[in-house]
Image (cartoon, rainbow over all chains, first blue to last red; front, side, top):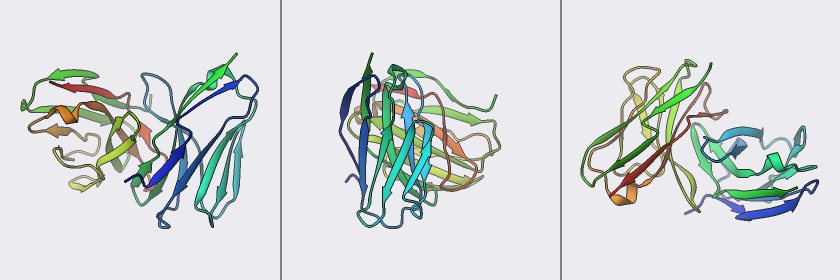
Length: 110
Length: 112
């Protein structure tokens, strides 16, 4: 069973667009919510992360919005660029247990 | 350069032939983990280790073994591989529980 549900599976946007990827979780024990970015042939790398006591976190063009009551969080990429084309994974953790969503393949068209 | 290394990067084997995938990190991290990545399923944790000689099961441990005899190394052992273990495997390490994990480059395993 998927403890972290991620949508959409794939997304195509034009350069400059704002792709949004959504995730939902069930387990209220999760206390850390990272997003990982993965390029073909590489391992995932941490992009941005948030704790549940914060509703929004912004780092450069990447923003996480977090809704604790709804148990949902999302990633927004402002002014998206072709170099942002990658697979994005949301995740949730407690202790050293890290649970990933299924991933979203993002393509930014130039 | 701080990194997690895995070997081999690619491996094709046959059902039942024991194999080991090695993982090493040079960041002096306490925690190490193994994941498998399958299309439509994301990454799933196989095993993790909190320190030398301390390991615990993740979500999909069946058919796998691990050991942590040294802090820097965390090998993944498949005693009797089966075709359903064909996957992309990642090793990761982190310094604090629940914090950023650093991933290796991956090992693509095919079991025929």
